Image (cartoon, rainbow, N blue to C red; front, side, top):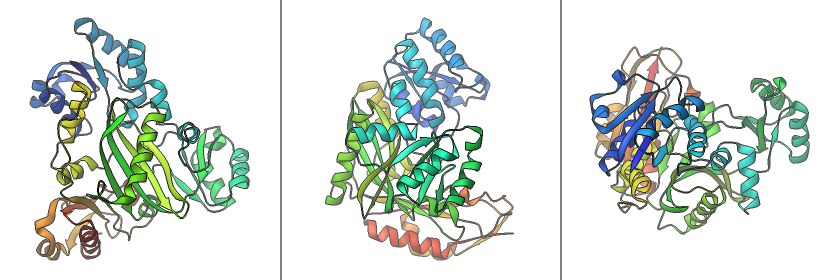
Length: 407
């Protein structure tokens, strides 16, 4: 099978997808923005051919490159794994009649209002939502649903650009920040009270073959607002054994079918609270924040190879062990500036060193990144443990003990 992979150089984990495709027997070509000279020596060995374009989100440029490749070696699959590349790749795929995720599915997995409309039509519980391109439409929705509300870009990834609005003044401010006064269409939806997590899968032919359940502590909007919080997320090893996850698994499979997802990785967000389980949103690609690293450690598996096996052979290659829960705790600097040092690391190493997976501790003098930059913007540590509750207590202790001093 000949697989063309879009943008193999950045982010750095893209190389793992290319390597896995080669290891499972595919002939791999790539289209990317950098020069051929910018490819690593390993990448050059894995690739049969490489085509440079000005931008991989430029549909015309990618289409021309793909046609050039196709004439010389028929393309069986054209794959992208970065959110920003999904739609342009789908359009090229559809224009050339290449198997894979359709433009319609890519749109439904990216445009929040359309996504929720399709899922509500399939009987999947979601927050009330709408698209709005004027303040009047936002106010009308607020009068209908009531506060609090969430407003965000229609095609935003994660919590980027997302605001909670508790009043009309909050709504007006958020609308201004998102450019609604200039006619930009945004997504607005009711605020769902409850615990937040994500459900990630690899699906083959519309059937989930691997799945993972991960919990946020606290919910993402709270985590991105407050410097004093050391937020964490934990992938549980109870996904198959705890009765409470059955409903989530059923919902996830329904979402895959309702949106027409065939063979792909997915990343779904969900809430569970007083009003039951609610679906939030989905990306038709692997999760960010290097979540697959945690899944690999917790399950004695290489998900990059599992993804490659799904694409190339249409079947999984391994079973998940569910041996460990695995999680990350983000460590925020005391202020913006430059990192001046750390406290508490020795204590954490003595207490939990045997369970540490890895850590990112930028050296003194490194400029800090904004809190809203995300879980891996500054320092972080990752741990595993066979007992989920013990791991959560461990991450809490790390967050309370380790301090990142900045000046």
